[in-house]
Length: 281
Ligand SMILES: [Ca+2]
Image (cartoon, rainbow, N blue to C red; front, side, top):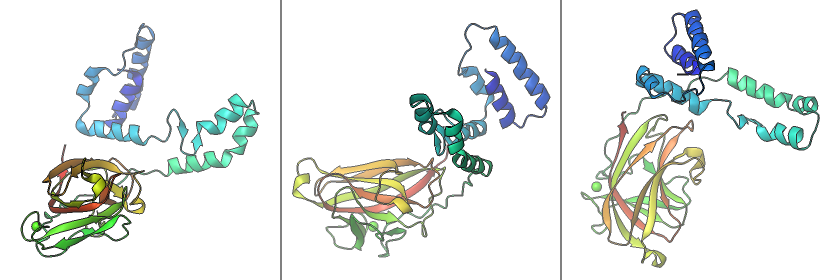
């Protein structure tokens, strides 16, 4: 174990004797300095970390404000090219970025660990009462969804949701964060029954591709911040059950479950029995 790992272990466990921990780290450092090869990622160390310790360590690693590429807005290219490539004066270059650095320092000092909210599991959406439940087409550019009792459109029971995808690479239906909160830093299993009612000509040979993913409400039509990919592919008449996982290791707020069209054609997909459960590790 490296002294850095010892310190981290001490911090995570709330070291009762920081001076002893520091001395221990010193001894480890001295021993390491006499070693020809310092072992990295000692598997044995894992035994001393609880699941909670690991969660904290992974969170710190994934949200560290400084990495090898720079620090927030203070990226490597801001100093590397002027100083190293163009040979500009180091002091002048650094002085010109004082406000950028100041902003990053302020941001870092005011950083708070995110609150992980509880997930209130919704009931399975069956559409039998005729309502869309927590789903909506508001703000969607790729089509719309509506509950249908048409015998040909029903997947289960007497009513199902029919999504009309009218555009490629666009979303037609989503969950409403006002009605269903999907808290971040949790993992979910999503499942639903589906049936393709119709697909356009270009999809007849290879099938129409639809996918379900999670996107923040302020970026519903972009795959930039999307997480997870539950795929459904088929031609008219094909049916099945889709199951997939969404691991929301993201700081994006107002996460929506989004039904998107792929890159080819248009068509109609009926869905039913949508279940969202949390995966507790
Ligand atoms: Ca139903």
